Image 1 (cartoon, rainbow, N blue to C red):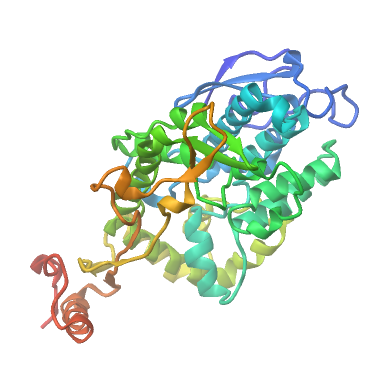
Image 2: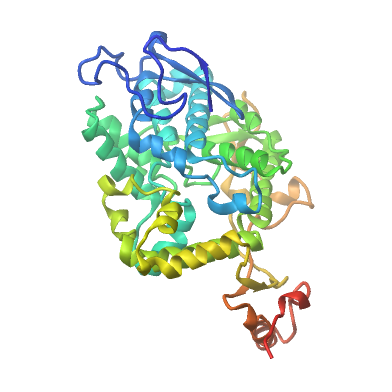
Length: 448
């Protein structure tokens, strides 16, 4: 992120660390009211994906906290950059991108249906804040911390980055004396948890559609995906033919639900097919997963000494955790971290866990169906309806996600044995070997 033009309030932490706050404290400075937008307080930043982004005064107060600045040290894709060198983008720029798209989405709805839906400045401000703050609860290396590390050291834990985002948001408001009404703050928190906890939005008696903009628990179409799909494709050098702006321009609220023109149904399919491609080629790349498994082992070895998992439940400590924990382990003088250091050094030397190739009889599970997407005929029609896949094209996939099975061997001398055991398992389960091809011989380094 780079600075686009100066602000009358001086340089902000948006331009570059270290953190700098406005000269007047939030508690004493004269600020515009909630939802208003005094341009003399607006900060302009330039994003390489969305161009110029205008950050309003209240959002800027959150951005200029050390808890939000921490996102600069959280890579969006964790250690994926070891396989895709360009994947060094962070949660910081992603959060600003979602903030921008959330603002554009609610602004489009206000332009065409503002009077009908009763969209007011409070709604617009709340949706933008939810977009800005939806990922502040991510741990080191993003999803790895939540889905791989914590289940190893704290089995049965219900911890999630959405829940931590809510706790951290309360902590930020109290610690930095940010002036925001409790009712508005609750709306922001409910919007953040909407996809992981749909029940949290049931308290909204009206304008339920607002909770589907940032994190859509109904069908998964939200501005969070719009941003990270485009950003991840660009960073990893992959093509992206999904055009989010078509859906943004065509979205319409009918029956308190966001609908899309039927003619844009292929754009919706491109959204999920591109996401599936990213999962297959980037997020679950065999070497990426090998690196992640090794890092999790290193974090588990270091947990007893560093107390990493203990910090995950206290927002006052949690915000101090970021990707630099690798350096903390590597530079620690204590011999208790010897095993963790050795694993990290193996990663540095590219001595990764060996793996057997995945089977090609994949266990499919649905991510989204045509019946989940509600469309309208055109802007002159008040009828909404689902579109059946085979009425659009017989080439559309029945599923947009699959499950890949790989077996990794920590000891390279056991690859041959593990590979044979994996093949025997397939024979018992399916009556045949279902791998695309056998494990390459060069990986079978069985000792004599």
